Length: 451
Ligand code: AMP
Image: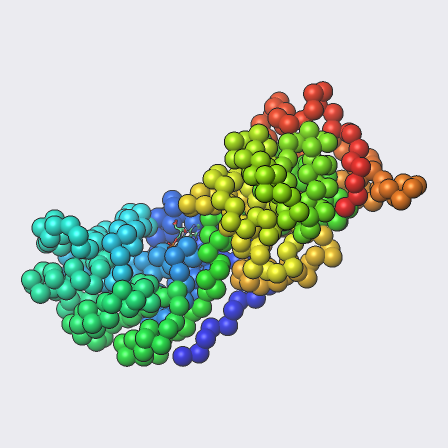
């Protein structure tokens, strides 16, 4: 079982190097239509690696947990491979440890397969048998089940596995943790040996490896780092910019009114303070939290952010740990973190509970090496954008006499600004001013900082 090589950020044949557009996956147009309606544009790493193998009928072992897009990674190949088979027979079984996962898979099946004739039924314990028996009798080609209830129904003669072609063991490690191994073994023995088996598990403890050895044939191994969870649902965008223009660019980006509660990360406490002060000088209400602030100052800043009196909260990583602010609309990495994993933690603040969030990263030339590490960890290159109208060619402000840094405002900068090219915040509505802008709308007050 050779482990699959990680895709390097520069690989891939879609518009953005390294990422695979969903429509490039080898799936029937009806499935692409379902995925499109669910908003899938870019394949997640598990999808781009598992789907091409799975549609060929290969056995697969994938380490991926909830949040990585794994459900679609096994449901779409099931649909693809059974699309043209006659109705009314069970062709695929998905075993999951919990009722919630079973229901989720059934719901995804409905949505992804809505342009097909395939029907799914979920069977799980804790509810009456009758409706499930009825649903099975009505005919379903795909069964999603928890092991105990499935065995119960099997013993009562409600399942015919003769046509079964595909088995998925979802969250295998959890299934074994919950003591389902004997049930799983009994179910597996009742299934035809000639079949495709896919095993998904967040971790690979020895018991799961053993199970794979026993029941899978020469499986393809696909590994997705569990920490990539945050990547799903977040629109990432890199904004390359010289370091001395970072504050200016942030100000420009914040002109977008949809950026209603923005968590901004800086590398140091000092930079956090300076940036919060600078934003406040520009009329953008900003709180700041970092390790040097007292508990009451932090609580006040957080509260201000929570209730919306600060639109921006500038934070360092340590201070931000454990922050749980509902409805963070955007995360801005003012500085690229030195540790790539930190990026995942930061962007995890947005797109909570599957809401779509946006994460921007200001990348200076000096930070490209660190940023490449982030992309390597994510497994794909992030799209890059330029903010139209922003004077990228403005020179650094001179250092004033007396040791003070000069004005950070780039000279000769044209008005306008706006939305970064490519994916990013929607354009500002014309005629509406950024709410925190000082009266008069002039934004020419000089920054007193140089970044
Ligand atoms: P899962 O890991 O299967 O529980 O999926 C987590 C969430 O990611 C679900 O809300 C999916 O609908 C969503 N999702 C899965 N694949 C994609 C994709 N390619 N693009 C955007 N969202 C996705």
